[in-house]
Length: 300
Image (cartoon, rainbow, N blue to C red; front, side, top):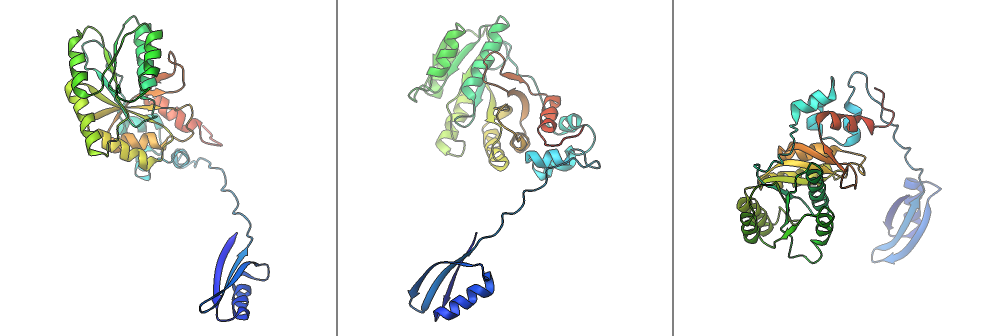
């Protein structure tokens, strides 16, 4: 519906303007006296714009439609179009396995609330337990009511102890008391990297633990928002990214946008709620397959 307000000294003049601009089918919704004459609110029913045609792959640019569909930033299109998409992705983005040996630094999982940090921590712990390794699982979110129950439930099922701390200092002390004979996984609280005090806490968590900082970010966000989050976490020390909720997101542009903006290496991807099987290695081939599989009317 097209809506417009007209003002004129007299009603006849206002109505003449309505008919001239909106035509004989215009509806008069309201009229009233104002200081300088009359005010008329008129509307015209218009047909909805037809839906855009489905995206189809251009034979000359075989990946352009996929990139557009997923909302991949335009700055990345030239590097990813044409040729083999997995190879193109490998030329732009790094993908590395998580270092989960006892001698490796602890993994500090950071990211916005609701992104899947706690479930990702449980999935990594389950993977290690199934391989015969019992990791040290820690949380730095002991201040928030109810924050530890989910992780405690998972670690209980895995027969692992959960170390609960509420600040960087207590986390560092707790970590130093454990012999580093097993990998260490640390679930950070959901901190706002744009808030100076919370950013300082995140930086302190990484400093006292000597951890590798991994951004856990859910797919399906606005690409620009994801880029801002990734850039802010990278400034605080994040070097790797675990993309979560790929089973729920139809468009993955935010994943590429975040990795590009933060210069973060892909490592794992959350593809389901299962603790035992809901996390996979996020290789270039896996990402390429998901980018192409989701697009309507895709032709190989």
